[in-house]
Length: 110
Image 1 (tube, one colour):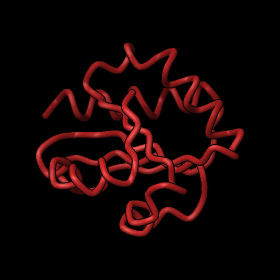
Image 2: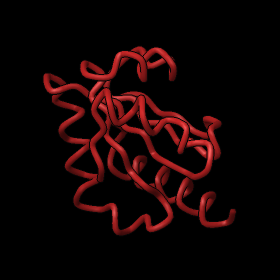
Image 3: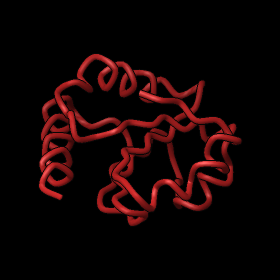
């Protein structure tokens, strides 16, 4: 999982027009964000078609505004620059797994 800071996001947001990414908006003070991050770090190999990117909302306010993030954690599926999925908060583990498996299948079918 990559972590983007303000400069990375500003420099690379145009790249999102070309691929598929899971953007995970978080903050250092957010305990559910840490739990979600730990789950993804431990399981991201199960989702080979997804590229996970963590964005610290405190460091990237332009990314928060552009993606209409209102709470942490917020997770988006972006395909060719368009939002194709979103969830807010920390779902139960089985629900989270179902969401990420569905997103992985969707991206893999492209």
